[in-house]
Image 1 (cartoon, rainbow, N blue to C red):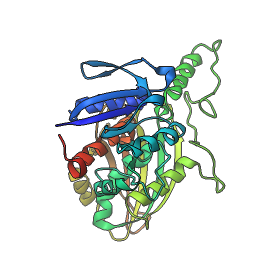
Image 2: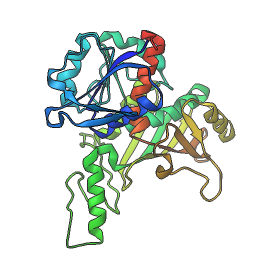
Image 3: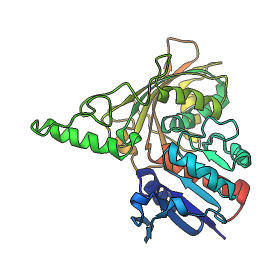
Image 4: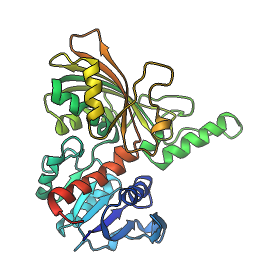
Length: 340
């Protein structure tokens, strides 16, 4: 016996990736419906060897459906998620709308799977920000061993994190560099993204941080431990898919780099590729399409007593969004709904 499943926003990058991952992981589906806005009504999407036509989100009745994976923006989520949840359908939301709600669990299944049990407060579970998701997968097993005091992270985030418009802008600007007559000014981003990096993701806040940086701080505390101090600098880079992070960690007690490497090799969702030679590390191009969060460049930080540095890479459309949502659904299945 499987689930009656809804994918909301099925025509977007994340929605399509959700469908791919549901098929790849053979999620037990008895019935599947794909929803989109009226502008995309009737658009065909693939689910394995099946082709599905999108139905109208605005008129859909969620009554009797088990789980709804939401891959739409905060405004649409605010309108439709409570309606779906009120019918008894459990909403797994990929937007930022509910991440900071104390009555909504924020879940990364490799890190805090037990948090799904709190879904009943609003019948909603939140998916974290893409940059946070991969980082906490790396941090949690180390925190369990030596307790993390402070994290300093610099991110190198691909344009797909801002949606299809970001991908198109990088592509168009890259072509225009070689054809100056066809100039493509910045629209999606604040400055040219082709052959450039932009230290600005989301809006600026009063203290000078951007909201993307604030998200990493607040979400890490909610998912792992409120006592962890986090400071982040988030940068958009001219990469199509795959987020990278340089992470500096200060622990309460000493953790040797070799032990850290062994811990991470055994950690769920982590793949360690760490050879101290040319090419002995993972870059974004190599992580695309993979489920794992890749860790490289593990080394002691000699400037503090109990410090480590590491390099973390993951497919942001997968672990940072679609895969994590499907994994939450799987966790719900084993811990709560117990079907399939």
